[in-house]
Image 1 (cartoon, one colour):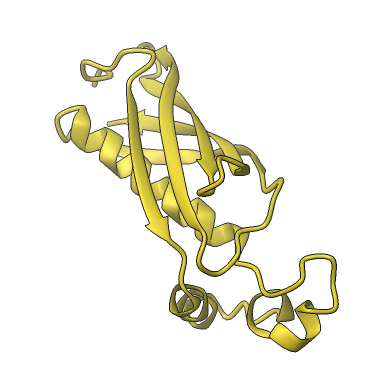
Image 2 (cartoon, one colour):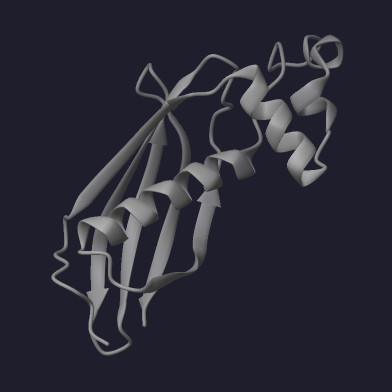
Length: 138
């Protein structure tokens, strides 16, 4: 299979306001009940000043954009080959609206794969997460 009609610079986005219920549902599904995410009292005494969303929840939103890219490319069969250089430079707070931007940065037709740069920003335009994603086409 070849990479379908993809071009460097192709881009999709996804936006979502992160609610308390999003964080608690994610905590329950994953079992990650760290005080960072569910204990306001403890977190209010830290430099964060309150609870923060899971970084892995941001990776879940990144996955949403990879699916949107597959749809944009005509619904080809592809699988995520993984995320590299994942970082969370700023916290995501309850009530923040995050926007995930997924942009194809490189295409390897021989393998066949695309490599995308992912940037997640909050409503103030601050970067809260970044990653590099590989899609492998079947």
